[in-house]
Length: 118
Image (cartoon, rainbow, N blue to C red):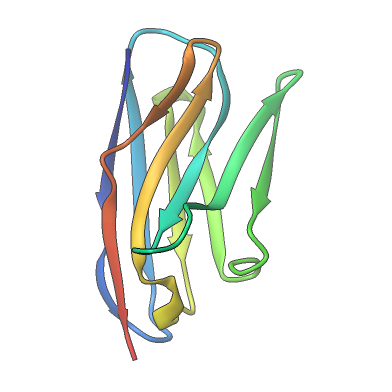
């Protein structure tokens, strides 16, 4: 099993910033994708940002709704990804979930709440 531990989040004002971190631990696996989803009650889970590894290189991807505002970064040695969220809006309010697609399946973090006040 792979455990994903999220940290960060909390409350920010519109226009502010927050940073989320996700650290992976547990069995040794090969990571294919690692990133963040978010979910608002009553809506489907939405992918926010992710890294995908292919042929030893990592590429980042973002939802259109966060491009230019959010930045995902990684620390391969620590199996960790961070999500820097800038220019936050109330529409970014959600539970954010770290996830990892590996050769042993998909794993999820417990989720962390982000609230953005107007």
